[in-house]
Length: 265
Image (cartoon, rainbow, N blue to C red):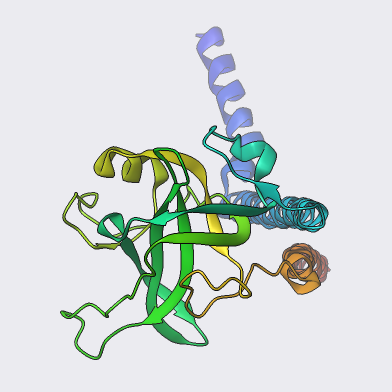
């Protein structure tokens, strides 16, 4: 009997001790702290991610400026390493193969939509090809009618800058383009090589504005200070939001603590 009474007394004391911990006030405080930690973690992570992106782009710009300052290389039939030769200026002679040409859709220039003209060039004295980005042409008013794309015949002297097409891209295509498709949403070199069944270098020649080898509206890439600095600006914004969130939380916490003290008096 006495043991039962003791257990009952201990249970009552435990309830009195731990009841405040599971009160509505505790739950609200825990939820607020959890939200603060989650919010700060997210915002600070986004800030560091933007700093990393800025560092990556700064490295790309430095590499581009360094390599384009080198003398142009002469492309031969041997396959070249895309890691080693991206951004190098290049000169190559060969014959265009318009039967393998594709138009890359949704290229924007000065706010206007159009196509990027991608034509393979068969290297002189070889069965090796390299894709040449000849520039931009506008859409026709009737999208069902493709624009006329004149291609010069005979031996061409092509000069430009070597570039790898992007491999990370978003697409709404339900299936990849086939042999008969003239318009592609994205340029995938491996898929192009398989579909067209031709030997192909792993880099694209961006036709220089000075080259007369059948080019259209075009500019070489520009990796400006703004292109790099904007990521640092984004990082400052994310870190600033994290600071604002922390300050707001502390101000509200101090106000709530002051209100509780006033209620006790």
